Length: 341
Image (tube, rainbow, N blue to C red; front, side, top):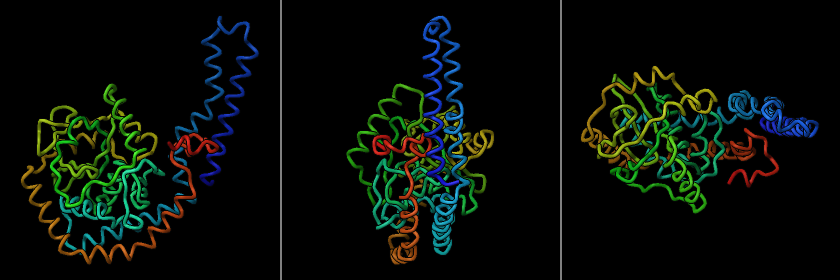
């Protein structure tokens, strides 16, 4: 089944469910207030096929022809990225992180060497990194691609959902390139998200955790940060332990159930979190040495970009045929632009 067909089926299920719900209420107007809960339950039952389809939409899309084609192209980019890292002798998690930061911020992983922090993503299930290649995305796009690279290098990597709190503004920036530019629409969107999550127990940020040789590394590819496990659900900023992010296991479990991210079970997640890590000074030295190496070997990355440019174009072309994640989930094709915003 095609992705567009799935969208249309969800829209038909929604309209049918709403029509049936309206019919139930219309034919029982005289007894509506006496049996409100009963009719409410019947209306919800009428919408249950649609709601079930929405909840499983991400799991369904991974079986479509279009998804598999985009996945094939994306996996080739990931393989090519890990190949260049192996050729450069980069295999330590911090080295991989520093190199990834250098590559994506300088545009070597994006179409036309242009990446902007922009809330205009496709958010394909378990392929969040596709948006980095498209040249626009947010924290979950950037961390997803980094996680995929680490996975492909046989490291134990997983995305983490956190509330950023005050930590982002206190990260010591080590990358030689500033964070991607943010367009005005996305600034407004992020501001609203922060306002909401400030008052609710909800995650508003995605980072990556990766382990090698019984050592664990908690890394923030969006903001160039390194964190360490603190008490309970706190992840302390390594360069300033007075600041922290808060880990949300519940939202991680929901994302896992819906099939939105590459996942591990909660027991394995907790076990990895308890592994020891390195101190900040060691991390900083490895990072800066790697960054220096990257800056002295720019021709490697220029060649890499030219060799993968065609892949980026194909991925962008195939991706642009499809709606964003919300429309694919809910089937609201006719109001695509409004839902996208």
